[in-house]
Length: 296
Length: 310
Image 1 (cartoon, rainbow over the protein chains, first blue to last red):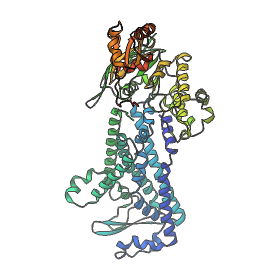
Image 2 (tube, each protein chain N blue to C red):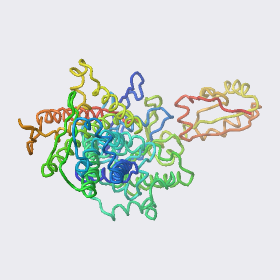
Image 3 (tube, rainbow over the protein chains, first blue to last red):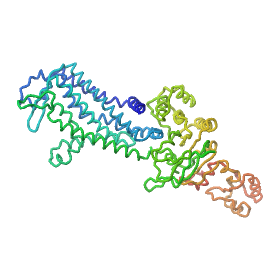
Image 4 (cartoon, chains in turn cyan, blue):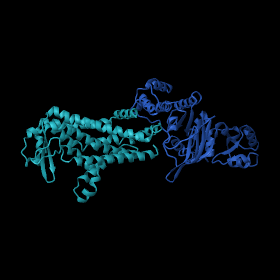
């Protein structure tokens, strides 16, 4: 099993498209960091909504933790596309190259083959997140230093600023990245599922991106019947659930409670729903792949 | 000869289309077994069913006396194959490709094993080059190395000479003969280059439109007593009329352009002298015995494009 996984990772590492994602992430993160380093005034754009409500010492807002939070807000919406680039190619890419039939004439069960491909996609996804963490968190910490994190939050009709002390932040980032890994694994499972049916990788990659876009739009619609009947079942409703780790609970005197979260049960339920999506999509992938006639 | 492969009542439907119909055949250990048929006859579909790439609609496959059930990979452990094209990872080297598929075959892989295989197919010098820089013939040879690396009992080669130049075809033929005679492998070869099969196979099956037409020993099927003689004369219609008056009348076969007689090869000179004595102006007499003629005659000479005549 381990040697097969090594082979799969080796194949992924040898494909140029694998590195597109890393280059894209590095480019975006470095541009944002350079822009804020050169001109911290960009913060005004972000604070338009809360500026009238709160008096904030802007010089204290920008630090490594804040930069990472802002970058994650921007990037975690785009990363699904990058995950689809590799996961959508897993089976269809082999079919397109003609190697799928050679692969399947080897004495390895189809379940194991698709399982290894899925595992490799997860490792790739985690790799992307670790890379993002290194750049967005640790590089930002090195460039901008560390201090308390201010989180600007639009809650119902009001704006809110939450302050998290600097000694209470790192675990939240680790948890947020772990949550993001689960959320992005749903995308990988979806892309893999679509990949089973295709004979070139463009189809499943584009289809995955389209599904994510459509579901995201639906998730952001504020229509009661959709809120109640559709949104709870859409994985896109939970993709940004990682933010929950930064919504710190406050006591009766409006003082943040160190080490707390406002709504852990909601985060836990989101994780369960995402895991259920992964199980269903991967299970369906195995079911169809085992029955697929290889005609390419 | 021990029976290696026993295929019974094998069928495959794609929706309403019957690609393979109730196919029975057997392959003995050590056979070079020719699998013949025109394009679309069902050869590849059958071979893919043997390799579990396609699930049969019905029928059973027995390998070394054991029925292959779903989820049983016995046949795959003992089989090496090239199906249609020798596709592999073009962005990897020949060595890497061989390493990957050797590992996937479940064997203990060593550098010396891989290099021996690459040496055998003449690719040792180029083993570090990416496969995308290889010619079709080199890819085909690498495909053979991949098929052989785990030392299988059975080797399945689907159209192995496709896209090869004459030298590549000759190399492939020699390789198949070596596999059989020197290494004792059982080889199933499908091809539409039927003369190639004639040169290497000891047993064969001909299928047409998914159905078996004939199976047997190549030498017997090419028995001289069953030679097809093609005659061309100045006036073929008149010649046919004259043949009706001879003892050769019952041996005449339907032909589109030429006169065809199926007869014993040793009787051809007598037949020529008979026709000459009846003032038939003979332009050519061609005793044809190749598998191709045999195959074409058995499959009713299905012509899709009218031959060009000047």
